[in-house]
Image (cartoon, rainbow, N blue to C red; front, side, top):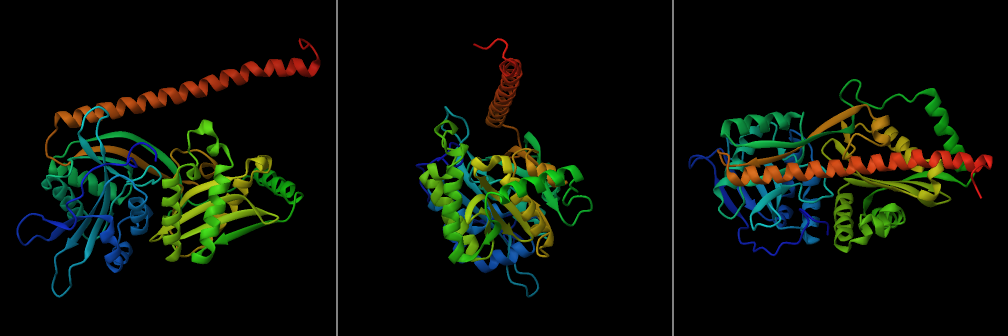
Length: 427
């Protein structure tokens, strides 16, 4: 497993099923602190909540959380917020959040809670009832603060920074006086069908012509077709095909430090389990661009509510000149736009780059935060925040240095190539 929230933790789990009453004895919201296994027993309540959610998050689907736990991810705590019965209406689920325990600092035994629970999940936003969002979130933070076995620091990754949940977060944290620091804010491409001007970016005539030529070039190699794989019977072989395709490219090379899913057995088990379980509920599909039946580009998409998430993609690098990933992206975008059940598509990109940035006009702003659920700034909060900020700045400096070195090398190589073509300076 990768370092971070997916590290194996040797930590006892003795708190399943606890209920934290919030406020007075007759609390409007109660919070259950439990384990991923509990989610299997509240399927109906979860589906009801997802239909009322302020914002969708496929990475909080019970199938994804359960698969992460089964694959040996870090100890996961699940928070379930329940409303009290009201005028003949029974208690119902109004909030769900999953948090993984991890080390707060490398050399100290202190812990913090991390969301999303996996490095391969790309949204840490809790799922909240649109009518009880502020109360549910405040109650979950109160429950964390009141539970002695839980850390008080939260490392929240990829929180939707401009959506309705962000406003609720700001309101609740301000009311509580909880310290919060924003580590980083990024934009990532999205397809927003309900917002004018945020759908697919019109392709210029020259770009469209270039894409047609690439497809024609590919068609000269053989029969080109786009296939979609859904449901239990089709999804399992498609998963294996995708994992093999990803491992055949740069991610599978030893120099890539095991980024290919198939090179990490526990991670491969997680993806197989999560995608298969989601597909059984018509919430996952794999789309493939095929040449003579062989997949040369594949895209894994998962859904929750009215939002789709383009989770993982891979392509055959031997056909790079034909841009199979880009051709598949065109097919998938057309399918998204034609699907009446979807209102938005999240690219899950870490940055505003790639072909989705070029062809999707919408942008989702996401932020990474450190939050202390207590109403005061502590030494530990300041230390963890400072270390996190320093690490990110060092990584960014290293990334820029690598990009600069590559640019220098490319500029230095150009004159030599020209001399070789003219015959001057070459033996």
